[in-house]
Image 1 (cartoon, rainbow, N blue to C red):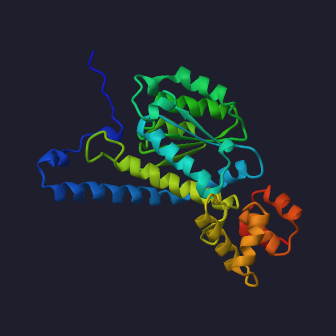
Image 2: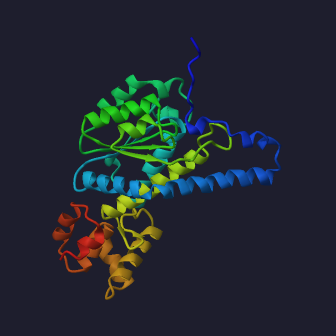
Image 3: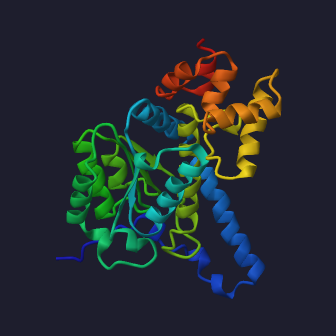
Length: 301
C-alpha cells in the first residue's frame, strides 16, 4: 500500500522562488515582504461583494437586540480577531457585553503557545456552551488554513444553535468556509516565510476584519458621514471633538452650545444630533435602540 499523499493548504506550501530569501540584501527582503502585503490587500478587495453580504446579514442579526459579535480562532488568527474586537468599544461605543471571544487554549494563549489547543474540539464545544451562543449572535471563525479543529468545531456548534456564522480563511478548500453561512476566502497563497501566516494571510485577516467591522458599525448607526458618533468621551480632547462634530452638523449651533448640550446628555453624541434636530430627549433615546443607519434615522422625522 502506498503512502497517503498529504495535501497542504496554500499557506503552508514552500514557494521555490523564495529559497534564497535569507541570502538577499535587506532591501530585497523588504521588497518581497511588502509586495506580499500588497497582494494580501488585493485578495481582500477581490471578495468585497462577499464581505458586503456578510455585513448586511450581520447588521440584520444584531440590530436592535442584545446579540453579540463573537470572534473565535487559535494562535495568530484569534490575536488578530481580538485586536479587531477590542477596538470596537472605544471607537464605536460597542457595548463590552456584546463582544465575546472563544480562544483555543483560553486567554493565556493570546501571549503564549498552549500545546494542543488548536486541536481541542472538546474545549470548543465547552466554550460555545459556556458562552450561551444563540441565534442572536454573529460568530466569526478565523483560520488561515481553514481547517483548525477548534475553530471549525466552534462554528459547527454555533451554527447548530442558530447563530450567524462567518469563516475567514486563505484556503479555497477550507472546511471553515464550507461550515460557515458566509465563507470569506482571501487567496493569499504561499507565505514569503513558509507557513508564517502572520504575514500575508494575517494581513488579509486584519484588513478584512477592519473593513467588515467598520462597515458593520456604520450600518448599526454609529457613523455619520465619515465621523465616529460613539467614540467614548473619556477626556477633554474627545469631548471637544464631539462638540465640534455636533456643531459642524447643525448649522445654527455654536461649539459652546454643542458642548453644553452634550454635557447635559452625558456625552451621547447620537442623542445630541437628534435633540439638536428637534427631537425630544425621550424620542431620541427610544429611536436609537433600533440601531438604524444614522442618516436614515435623521431623515425619518
